[in-house]
Amino acid sequence: MVLSGSITFLYSSRLADARRFYSHDLGLPLRRDGGVLFFALPGGAASLGIVPEGTSAAASPPVSAVTAGRDTAMVCLLTDDVDGTYAKALAGGRCSAEQPPRATERFGIYNALLRDPDGYLVELQRFTDAAEQREFCGGSAASEAASDQAA
Image (cartoon, rainbow, N blue to C red; front, side, top):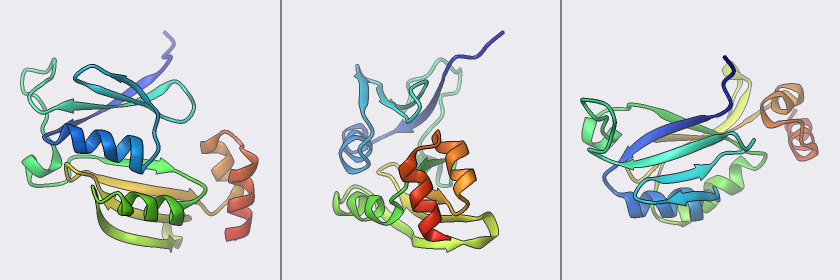
């Protein structure tokens, strides 16, 4: 058996705001919009699916973090430009700031935390070690340069 891709699903009570947040504010390409939104994640074989609450193959459909009243998942998006991505996302007005960009030495990362329109934690992250950034981001020259500058 070989796995060939993945889709991570989040459940939304504010689908239109979620669409604009992930596509416009964070710049994820929209793969499909047919009632369920599918955004392409870097690397090509992974997607983020945003599903209207109450829609699921599960007998007890999952709900958004806002509806649950607690954190139910966190999406971590890797970027070479944590500060710029954070500022752009906040400027869109569809998310809220949870933690401004900062070095988190305990985990060897530079990160920021936002809350999306449905209350999910969204982490914007860059590894401070260039080799680790390359491992998770496919070895882009931009990733290496950004990590080297942070060190």
